Image (cartoon, rainbow over the protein chains, first blue to last red):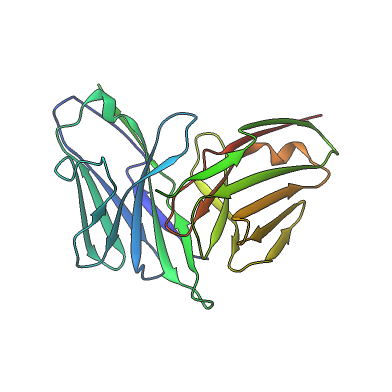
Length: 118
Length: 106
């Protein structure tokens, strides 16, 4: 089956520093990757959608300059949280999609990255 | 703006009982997804529903889609403790419902 990895799984950083999270599709080429954040006991909030080689499309209310997304290849996307603050502490989840046989975009989720900003 | 509403948000049920979780969405959608999330974990894909009238079943879970009513249901049959988790529906642009936190009690 399709596997998506995220690295790191947990990160603690100091306020004002930047953190990079990697999302990789291990055994397939992803046409699109999605980035979500999830606060405790809440739903997933879509932050941005990225296609390889093009700029990410950010959801309303998500700061582009704060959450930098790079989709350098069909198997790798990165999310950089710049100048992190405690309110950025959250569970960040990526997903990758490929075109299925029925033209359905199946989503494969990474295991998530828990970011804590102190 | 597209809205995805799930109900109930919390569900506590006895083992062996049946129950249905509902997912309503506000605009047309070609696909409807159901996911499961265990505490501290990422999402596990359960079902992808592609067309009106689609019904899929896996074990004690059955999902259906009515695109005319903009409604999907996730039916739980004879619940067991292992089904305790949070269940999310999502529409084709990956907007999620609030989730239904299911607890199955012995």
